[in-house]
View 1 (cartoon, rainbow, N blue to C red):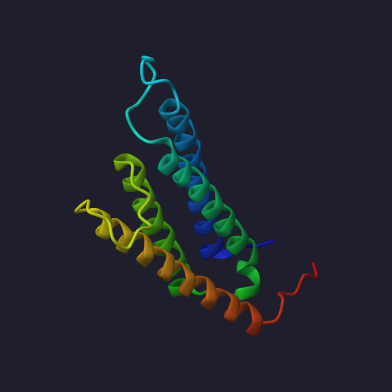
View 2 (spheres, rainbow, N blue to C red):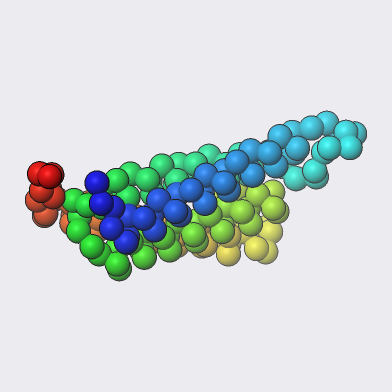
Length: 148
């Protein structure tokens, strides 16, 4: 199966997200150590776990989008929406993990929590728009010819 330029880019981005998830898994393990341990990093483990799970789930989304790319045909702007949404979302998750914030509360006394929430929401909305456009393209096109 020929994935095309957009599909190969989605697979590469998915691989990067798997690396981010693996790094976050190690970081989470260190954050869960006892505070008196020399291996403890002074950050809350739950936002790091969110990063780990989010990066892994987004990698799966990217792999599925790449797998379906021969059926959707070349669409650079839709692929860029998906890439952009994933990058912005992961940047928000990384910042949340580094600061110990989840970025889901609409009202929070910490000054940077509203920016974190806006970043995560922007990334998720851009990703959703890209995925909806991808699915609409998928529904409108015929499957590629699989004859040799």
